[in-house]
Image (tube, rainbow over all chains, first blue to last red; front, top):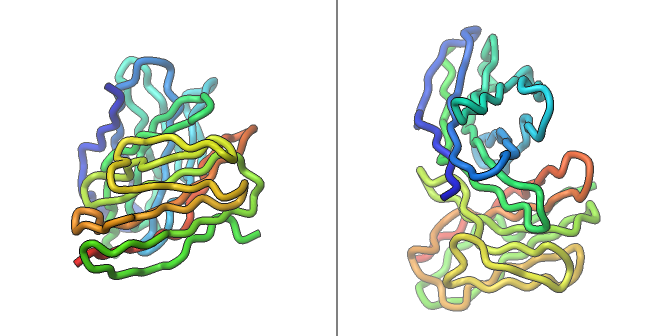
Length: 114
Length: 113
């Protein structure tokens, strides 16, 4: 069965520190991978995505993620966290067909200490 | 460009009442989706519509119906609301080429008493 696991429910980092949010997936074919961010009371905004090619992808707001097929992982990173990055982050996996359904992980809530 | 809009933003229902959540997009997207978001469970797909006139069930369709009224609008109906349907509901649409990104609306927070 297809699934996405985000093992960390909450993560707290200090402002200026580096960040890594973990995402592991189970998928039968080559996956299409996404990271979305949700600020409180808001909808989801796409941070970055991986379809093919270079396994290190750059996104908005200084985020990047690396696809590692051997580890079935797509971890999100940022070298220096800002207070405005406090939000909930969702990893998702999908496929390219007519339905293009996404399967979401349960999310990781990021708290930023001043 | 308003993107994806949803109405209402908040709603409180009593058990057994019915209501329709409205969603519209102005990006000329063919595909539209309804998700529900519950604490600790991420987003789960309720129904989707790959094109005008077609709808298909997602992961959690029970207790819901949908209508793809036209290319712009995709509504979600609860015929007889239950407390288990208390959730935040998101509508999304997907562009057809290029990045194939799903764009989300701001959500509807529904409470069923």
